[in-house]
Image (cartoon, rainbow, N blue to C red; front, side):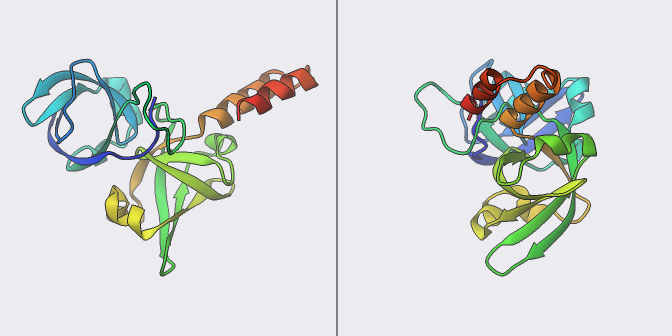
Length: 203
């Protein structure tokens, strides 16, 4: 489980086959789960200046692999007792989104990201979303895209500073939105107030 708060921008040392080697300040342990650009990966080797994780062919098929060449966002999995900020992030990338436009508003940036329409029901206005591992709030949702507003601090301290029109990014939609949508779809003919109460209790 993660929070979507980036702990470090690390450097990629190499990507050879299924092995991704990262140079980082974070001292990982063998078997640790670490979100790299939002994807939960397992540490299979520990180095003096970083660690190596395994990227299965299935993972590589569903991630924006061009973003695993230079710098990457990393976040170690939460530990019991950690302060909880951001939102509940599983590290399960749902889809690849494409940056459609970035508008500089002076004291903020509007970032528009297009995504396959089938994922739109899981994206909620004023709800949470994870972009390359960064926890953000959705401002607007349209038929095939959504709008985020990024403050200058986030733009400067994350890889958002490198994004431009056409950049592909890993997207994890809100876990609770996925669960609620699934429950409503499954129980649409038998929905009762008890079920509604259970759905509300998730929040």
